[in-house]
Length: 450
Image (cartoon, rainbow, N blue to C red; front, side):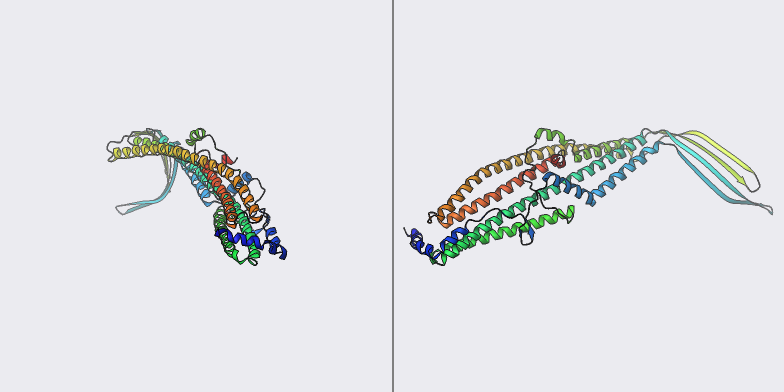
């Protein structure tokens, strides 16, 4: 029965507290509004949430990051350079024409007779490959597939940048909402502390409750500081990608919360940019192997040339030639080893493609399961949160009504309520992050946003 003595002492002092006016203001202060002003700032950090379209804002952030990214710019130039290499290799099948002009002074001396003259010589030549065993065609196909691999590599770099921006933006929105929750928690604890300070002035026996309330208030402030620190870090990462002028974050609670059809995504996995890049590289290695093999085959080419020579003595000489040349390799040391090496690289590239598709399929299943579990936990937390909110309100009313519940019950209910709200945000963000990565493995997160 000793544990009820402080409460009995409080009841005995209740008429005195009411008479002196110490109790009524304290209870009135407990009616704090959980809703915060959207313009309110904490320690220089704006915690407001914009009413902009969240999907539109994410798409705008991604577009800005694409324009600013040096990595995307470099990938674009590499893709353009690879295409120029392909054009150069493809034009090798066209005839080549060369011209040369020579001017020289020539002379001779015979038995005291010395002669000297200046002559000019113009030579025109043209050559064309008639048959080379497919060497030019294979080299052109090799360069074409390398260009396609670079183009798909550019698309993959864009997808990776997009999912990075989306993750940072989603995390920023989560931390902003989490900071607002901790700010509300701090206000509630401040109300309790203010009320207890008024009570302790009359009843010193309740000082321990005041200390406990102050401890909870400081804990909430510490959680708030940690959240603001994480928020600033996330914003720095986002600014590195999209620039220093960050728009106010929109509410992303309803973005990327729907589970897609997993089988459809798995079918699209083979069409993803990274897999397409590996497939193009595999085809390039196969064409390169065919080109190496063609180097051991005969070559037939057409050559036409004409030469005109003029001397200072006025003589003019003209020569021309036209014919077909055949080149047959007889001994090529290392040719077989080069062919085997090229074939092995082609086979290795094909194995990389199969491994990438298999790995991507299992990653999709893992991310889908994680997102599904996170969304399920989020729904269950919402149900628990409703009960926690009712318990919180009832506990506070019972404590206000003649101390039918202890202060520790009130603080426990408050802590449980706000902790559940933070847990709901974290679980929802976990699901959104998993879904963003899931879409990036298939058609891309931009398709999900659009």
